[in-house]
Length: 540
Image 1: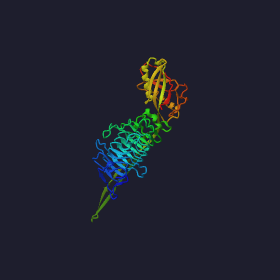
Image 2: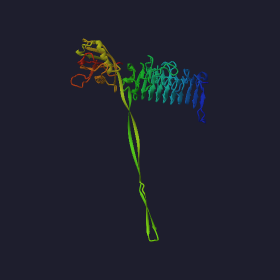
Image 3: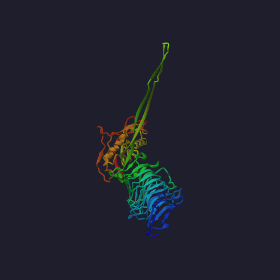
Image 4: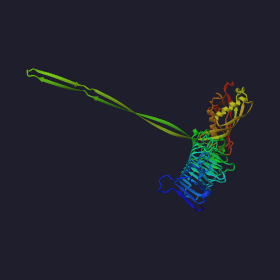
């Protein structure tokens, strides 16, 4: 076919039932390139083809109201899938590339590669053994791919790999889309050097615990994340913008909301929510937050949603009493007999019928009305990682313990206060009464602090809340009698300041109120002393 052809394959308007074309295939190597192909209103089905139903190159394909089923969908088949559209320009087209198309039980779903302005609208991919929807790059790198592509109101169900994948390309968007179950990450951004937008979408059941795809391939797990981002070192322009998107959790293997590789920049704007009951805490790799712009902006990173359900039961009892009474009736019959001898004989016969029947019926009807109210409580979480330097000053009662005994007690307690920390005792000085602690700690707070004063207060409150911690360390406290100071600039900036902030004390003894428990059975009967001088700074 020449470049100017238009081929239309569609169901006749007079046909009301389903029209099935078995083993349909369009391949550019046989049917040619260029032109326009329109396919509408059919079911393209196969039980045997290991290949694509439709594989075009430089042909402007418009698909609508289709079901594509069974292409490379058996066992280890991987040669094809529902469709593959390559090297096409849709920028002047008014009709979408695909609308109301379902791809089910294939290998690949919707694969669109190295194409300009593709638009896939209201389509569904279900039970495909590989990726459901993707804008792909022929080189698998950022030097190729799709430009200005949009997935709009599309649904990916039970994807054998990812629900939506972006490889290379520029200015790509998914909006109003849903991922409902995927063996790999629900959404994957790979080797792009431009912007990918994820808007008003929902990700559920992503990243199951399966170790292979249904056809036996490797899984794109991205550290068990719902959103996975991986780019090459040279892809410094890679930017992923997430807005209005809900992360409901993954399969049994999903632990992170996102896993991002620098230098890709990940930015969360308003309206993003995740269900904290379905992820680890915090649900991201804290060592990679330097490339999460939304984390360092004034806008909160994500929100947590917890659902609270209350049930009210109302019981209404109706009692009905029915009483039936039958009265007593007396019937008297008198018979008089007269004889001619003037003798009168009178015979009186009295018959009395007495019936008394009283029936009482009580009917109780119980109507139970149950009202269940589910309230979604959304709180904002900002989680920041800080470099911490801490001096722990011990009193003389700890002189009986050597440094080997002290170190695990101190480090275990710090781990209890900051579970995601990496704080270690790096040395002792002044006769081993001062332990030098360094490392990183992750601190959760309601929102990003405007300066270190707020962060310092949260850290002090964390220590205070942990003061009565017991368990493997024991319950003997260490009092803090030193001041806590913080120096540095505002979170998320590269500037610094020499301003010092001192943790406020609620009592009058100028002694911060938090304590550290130490081990039981070490012969320490008197609380020992800890003084702390902390220096906090971001790791950017």
